[in-house]
Image (cartoon, rainbow, N blue to C red; front, side):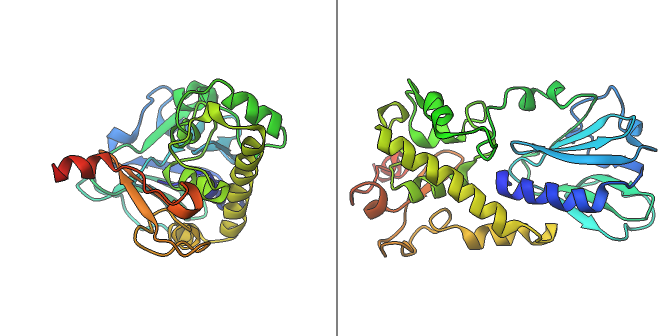
Length: 287
């Protein structure tokens, strides 16, 4: 799933390629992605793009005198830029294409979604806060006013494990499965540690890891073409998705805990005092 760094890089890319250009056509291919109907998609046509914003994992294309196009790429969605869009109308079908946005220059972008779980979402709204997922977002962890004191206040009394707390978009916007693993590895903390149990020193360490990991990933992704962002993300991850590989810090083997629809990766030496975490799904399979 694209997370804050990749969506921020897409925002930068679209700011450069969309701002000042007129939207002439918005073509829905998979109607299921459209989550609003008033105003219609056609209300975007004929309006110039004035800015592109990011809200957590949401992209927000603002137009002059028209509505805004807000998109959440979900787990398997992606944006593909084309300097020259194919001629003719795309045909609805079983392919990954979900939506096409065409500019007066002949360029534009496609939104696609792989797999069978169709969760990509597109909204046409006057205000991004009309999108429920945007309205409930917590603070952006890279915002100038997101200081350590604010972070500590969010975690105070938080009884969930750190992994779950970091992924909660209403607590902190933009962090998902991959970067929560990376942040906890950088902070040298167990994903199962309770957020409310952190000492002042641990809170400071986690805050530094949160900001540092995300800022480094954003900087690494800056200037990279939209089509290469996925591979760039994977190449920069130290533990997430690297089960069985050596930890780049200590050399221990990266371990995994599996859940029904996801998994987490961690280093026992760096994060859990050398003790492997219980993998409940694997334990059930072995019974």
